[in-house]
Length: 280
Ligand code: NDP
Image (cartoon, rainbow, N blue to C red; front, side, top):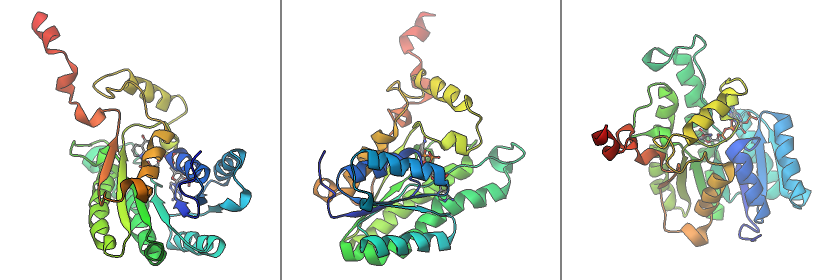
């Protein structure tokens, strides 16, 4: 286990589950003091227990159950982190979600309330939490890592168009914020995962069993995931840690690293072997 984040303080949003949980555990194992957060107190406690099980002292972990979609929740995260740890070096804007239209509508007729809810958590909370963290990140010459998605494009996403739009906007925010903040010594980058096994499907209201079915389909179809397996939270956590590690990634500014098992490089056309088509 390395100690590369020793002396650093990291705030990882959405760390009560999935990619955020994996990231918080990794940061803590590598020496960081971490603020973990989410609304679900039970899952948040599970993250904390996993960190403690890894032998990390309890005073290296601050768990805050709060709603990140509210500015009060965001103020609480920053204020309590500074009060307990005295600084902020790394902000991981990971929390995110997709919501279904109550009537099951997809495409352009999806209720605009779905758009509002998605933008609130996936985009607006990143914008305002970044503003609220800026002073401390500038003081620490820190790093921001945003968690985007390959859904951002350039392929169309008619089923989840508002979610895809939120991530496309987040990518432009990453680039523009990076150029603004690098003048103060703060780096901003992002990671764009493909399909990863997390609580995302459940949070969208998929019944148990349904997202496993989806995952199985994806990993057994080479036109979906050429790598042949769904990603794990730790796969993404390692990239987040790389982008937060100035010794390794100092010259990367405003970029997104795609980690998707090759998904975004294939089109359905390519999934069918030309020789097989010509033989039949
Ligand atoms: P999970 O559902 O497992 O985790 C989402 C996290 O976000 C949870 O900790 C959840 O906490 C938190 N969260 C959601 N809404 C709020 C809120 N209003 N206030 C506070 N916390 C909130 O999903 P993932 O780990 O998959 O998602 C993490 C990121 O990865 C997201 O930005 C997602 O868009 C992105 N991503 C995921 C992919 C995947 O295939 N899984 C693919 C590409 C990108 P709680 O429920 O406790 O509030």
